[in-house]
Length: 245
Image (tube, rainbow, N blue to C red; front, side, top):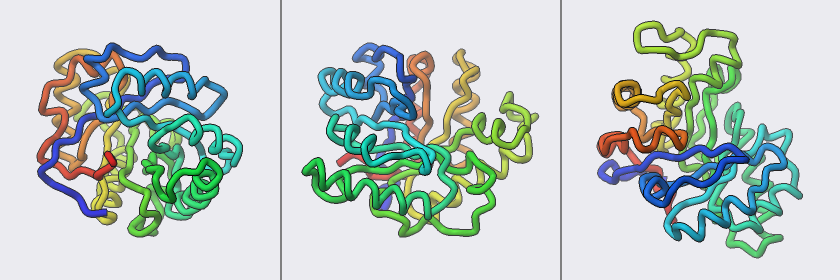
């Protein structure tokens, strides 16, 4: 998918399964909510409430890793009216291709147009994806963006959490570069998850500036971080994945 370098991308908003939806003013500041659907978490109620508050808000379910995804779960999620899925623990194109096949079957069962369900992939959050030599270009026409989470990679590799610009572990530096390079190679967006401990204006500005310098298209935030973002957090000079249909 081609990218439009002039279009502003709003942040993605990650929501825990049990979280209440933020106020409409908060929802208007993001392009999509991503609700954790890796367990039994009431995804139907949450995405339904989001649709009632904003018809323009995209709704994603976070699922995976790929080995844990069942056809029954996908059938249920697509029936709830979600716009797409975020694949956790993506190791490379094979995982995306497998998810593409599962979604194709689920779309047929739900009576949804083929390839109407978007895929975002959490990438470079496992050693396998950081070390993978395989391009993501052409893995699936559904794939519109990669999401990098430094904390997830730190946990997966046993290195220190991201705590600032001057003491970032080398594993995180390599992972961040891998996510951005793979996204650029595939012509899709790259999203950077803001650390959970970034809860003041100075920290948010610092991490957003770091994301911009490292080539990310937009950031991923928690509800308590949205209000702290300034307009530059949308990173309008960076490419968009064209995820909104």
